[in-house]
Image (cartoon, rainbow, N blue to C red):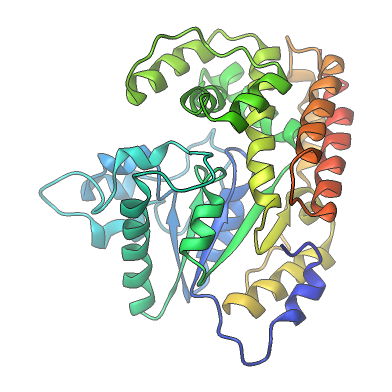
Length: 359
């Protein structure tokens, strides 16, 4: 994993082949869509938005033009609709992107690929090959691959695997305020859904216990029904439990990033340093031939501080223990680069500072 971007831009051998695709492994409300939009605007790039989203199962060609940012999304303006690149994989007389399966939409954290992975791999390979055949670089923006990052890195060794990491307090606040102000509980429900459907996995079960998560008391049911039940649960869940679930999923995904992304994008650092933005641009250029301009990145920490007064009903001072427990969990795992652990430690220190004013 590359943590020093100035160095990574120069590490590639002069004659080494460029990566053929970009896989952005992000989290919900992590600013991943903004990062993706910087790459998508390049002439040689084709940006596939959320290739594993369950929305793609029912997507129709007629729906594509309306797939644009809403006023509450916080997403940047887009020159083309979110799902514009899927047009070649949609038919006029039917719903659904060719090759997509709803089972792809739930992340998994097992060490080895599950039974659905061959079809998931074939689906992503088809999107990639079509795009590469047009002389462009496919850029995939994921929110559902944190647990499957290792699988995808092995299966798509010809791709540049990029992790997008934002401090957990800012990321959680972004989703929590959408529930609080606009009754959009999706981002509060997502961690419960992913953790609940993976709770039999020993690693996930350990993270749930370490973070003190109380999963919704739901009977065994199909994945779709469980997802709906989690969204209902999230509408009234107490803030402390919601944050604990979020941190458990955040640290699990961070763990997988630490096991080996090719490039890490530190969102806080990106908003503070033009030099860092330039080094990231050079790293992308050296490794995949794309040269995105990240200099317009906003300082999202300032925005989190500004919204602190709206984070009501949550005792920020009590969250230090959750941050500490999650960091200890990460440190206990084998094979994690010390430099990456230090990045996560800094994220937790920042999260402590930001949550201190929540009441």
